[in-house]
Length: 436
Ligand code: NDP
Ligand code: HSE
Image 1 (cartoon, rainbow, N blue to C red):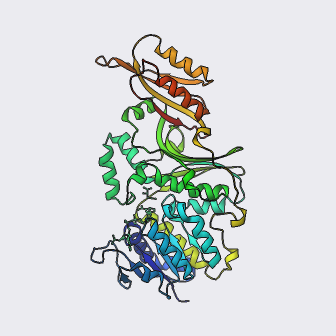
Image 2: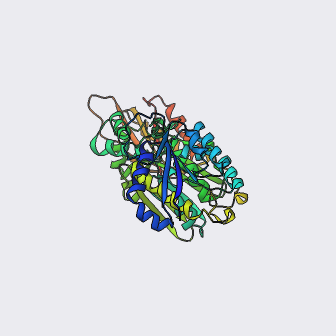
Image 3: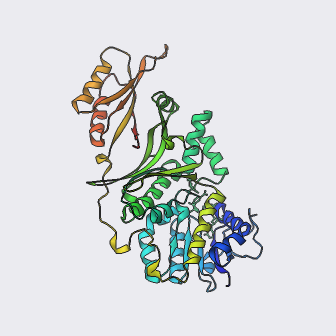
């Protein structure tokens, strides 16, 4: 059988990684797919830039539309990133009857509902394994391998850049900006790295995971998002003293009232596997009713780990080229007409434990006032830490770990504590998850 013809948009980190993996493993891939998979044309902006892959035999063009409009192309591989242009190109490829493979989580999180509806009408597939967790086959695992389960919650480290920064800061005491620059050099970071640092990229990925886990439409705008830029070295040390590590988690939890969707720095007990996922590695812990907890771990970013997921999608799409569209795996795991209208809860309704770090005048009665404010609101304290203050400073650090409480209630307590005369700086609040 003739090789399937692929048109590639983007020759950057992932695009070139994919060209290399497809060439290196061509024979193995053909044995799996039943026919060869060949990139016949590729598009990038700068035709003079040297590329990190061998482009012999691939027709190159600066015009991405020429690729999606080429009648010979059967699968369009979108690896340019960004939103508007990517959306236009993907919709046009679908209109032209082509299948699409993409690693673009921003595109899927924001426009996936429209894109999948369009693809279903046209009878084509849009595959997006590489959009979450880099090389970890997490989409396939949740969408297919856990299909017999009701998924209760999932929690994951789903941004490689952020985890790399947190790990290097903790283990080597390195500077935030310096580690971010290295993540950019290694090809981990987004074109706009604030997406990584502010949790937007993780929120895109959580949007996708929640959809395929719970069978709800993609709702990026409802994800609560906090970044890692304000985590101080002092909080990392305090957390360690209390037996925790700070990780940037994406959490999706089904409750009777609705679904919690949140991305934020989180204290995780140091013995939990997730607390020990370091560097660019990602991991997603999924709790499902029949199987119980399962953990998926692997490289969350980088050229060839991501290419691994992209090529797996190309193989899947190639195998399904002759399958009746109604018999393909639904894009969002559940049949499109069976997606549920479950509300996403506001962050004030979230429930978890909290780490509070405040600086207060070092005088009698301050700790008693703080504990009174918490107990008046029914908030139990699990632990208190008051490191010996430096002799030169006049205020003292107080660290409190609370029991599980509703977010609105802790916010009310924080506001009251912050109003105390003795409190000298803004209080730091970090959520705590025990992941039991
Ligand atoms: P890069 O910035 O390395 O590459 C982007 C490529 O797209 C470049 O070759 C660029 O051309 C090309 N491009 C941009 N605009 C156009 C255009 N208008 N027409 C044609 N080509 C264009 O990005 P990555 O490879 O890192 O990321 C690609 C996608 O994969 C993104 O959606 C990203 O979020 C996702 N992803 C990335 C991962 C990673 O580890 N890097 C992991 C998982 C997903 P030129 O080179 O000429 O500028
Ligand atoms: N910038 C992303 C990350 C790439 O660091 O996780 C992988 O999606």
